[in-house]
Length: 350
Image 1 (tube, helix red, strand yellow):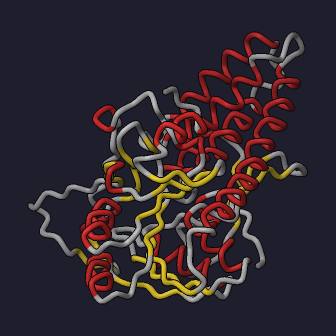
Image 2 (cartoon, helix red, strand yellow):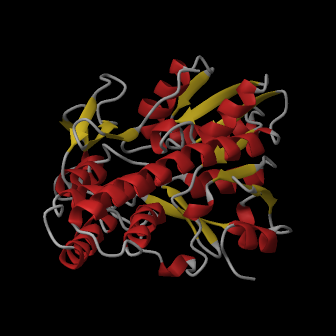
């Protein structure tokens, strides 16, 4: 497989580079990002998206802030970097990886003694590179763990895009599929289109077709019917945040979990340890609501009367008791039996 690089630091230019996901599948374009303001815009418009990728973006966002502080003394530079990094971390509220990535780099900068803003800048790039490299390795480790769950011939339903485009590479839910295929298993994927922005139809289908992995796109509302027909062997989704009692993922995930339970189909969540937020319960999480126009138009035509209100939640919450197992880089944890082991492995406290 020709591996996808989603975002990376370009040393010759001293800026971040990323695949603009808003243009896929029609156009493959790599864009430069030279300052944190443009990075925040890219995150808010979903040009950069996906929980692990947001963690990497957050890490490089600190480097972009530090880039503007190179001429300052150590203390002033660090103060401005911390303030600027807060703006990056708040670009999207629900995905915990974004603030996690910011925090990973800031914690390294706070250990840099003396020096000046230039030293902090170099330290920020180094720390962010480590976050990106670790994310790729995490996805491959996670994929290897999850591949053991799939039979030799199977059809997997997935929702949104939890592939290489949602990480620095390889993917979480699609990383499991890629690892299974690499191991010689024959896996077909049913990709829900994922309204209203079609991440499944546009991004998941693009990735899998590029890798020559069989994929079929369906309307989100067709998933339960295919389950009833016996055409789905497993559901695998990613996650933007996992709390002590729920999985937060793209809106529509909860419906798939309910339908999978009714039809006796395993429902798996693939997510790195950085996605877990054990200190919070589901009721404490701010669920992002996005713009009206993402729902009210289609192919340039208005599809909702102007006087009619719209609710456009980006995520929903799936109770852990609907999850068969959570796949991490530390192994597969069946629920509810492995709950305490999972907490310990992913940084929680029993």
